Length: 79
Image (cartoon, rainbow, N blue to C red; front, side, top):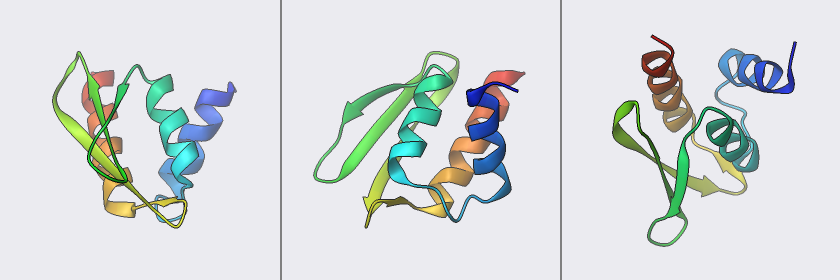
C-alpha cells in the first residue's frame, strides 16, 4: 500500500481527526491545486471536479465537514 493510499484510508476512516497539513498533502496527491483565499481559508480546485473546496484551519485541524466534502469530490474524480 502506498503512502497516498494509507493517508486516504486514515482520513476516510476518521474524518473528524485530520490535521490541516495532512489534508493539504492528501488533496494535492489527488491532483487538486491550491490557492490562497481570504484569511485562513485555502481553496482547492481540480480539472475533473466541477466546483471548488474551501478549507479553513482551526487550531491546526481541518473541519470534518470539509473533509467529507473532499471525500465526495474524490469519489467523483475516481469515476
